Image 1 (spheres, rainbow, N blue to C red):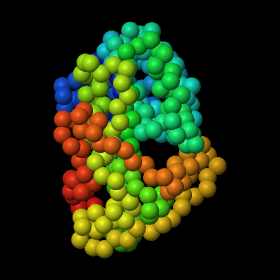
Image 2 (cartoon, rainbow, N blue to C red):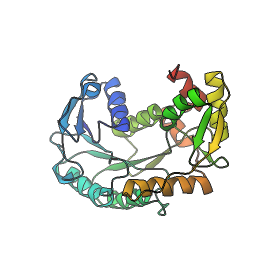
Image 3 (cartoon, rainbow, N blue to C red):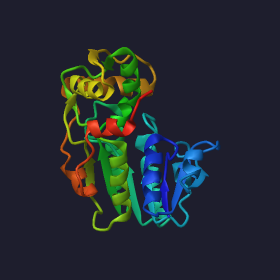
Amino acid sequence: MIVVTAAGGSTGTAVVRELRSRGQEVRAVVGTPRARPELDGLGAEVVVGDLVGDPAGLPLADADALYLIWPNFEPTEGAGAPTAFRAARDAGVGRVVYHSVLRPQLRAMPHHAAKDRAEEALDAAGVPWRGLQPCAYADNLDAALRTAAETGELRSAWGVRQAQSLGDLRDVAAAAAVLLTEDGLDGGTFEAVGPERLTAPDVAAAMAAHLGRPVTAVDTRAPEQDSYAGRCLRTMFEHYRAHGFTGSPRVLTDLLGRPPRSYAEHLADLGDPA
């Protein structure tokens, strides 16, 4: 049995889908007791658990492995994730895989800093572990593709000069499944990075080719917000604007046994954005 937290989110659902496609039994932990047809349809055991409020109370009975995803931009991660690691140790879970981020040591971004502290705690948690460090998802721009189809514009909060190595979420989920199920990888942190370094104009050109209409990258700024999530987003985009967010796809290629999907391949699989 593999336990996946934050399973109702896009990353959690993708990991559950990938594990089920490989015949794994999955316990999908969600935060609220509402209908989850996307998980029920995959044949997962759906369990409500208060990850944020009570990480020590995760439903880990009979679990062989835990994939710990913390909700996006949630300020409790730095303290809560170590508690979950200890709970996994105490429950006798054989393997913990932590969903981190590419370059968590970039502590200017609060959500990176939280994951960096969590990785430090994971190393001392007393349980066999692996860490997955994905870059930004190509999927994050799917809504922008629909807007571009209507307006001919890609509004880029990370500017128009620096690049990102966008990865397909399906590839990240496949890498997570490898780390959850294969031996010989304990104590490793593994980058999950897309195969190209794409500026916003590069993304706009790929969207234009996919849509069959011109698309122009337009420089914009993330709005100022007082919330923790808002501050995280603002500092993240400002970092991307100044430095980009790129890496090497070699580790992900080795985990997958094939090259990661390109952005054009991601778009082709989306089909008509309408």
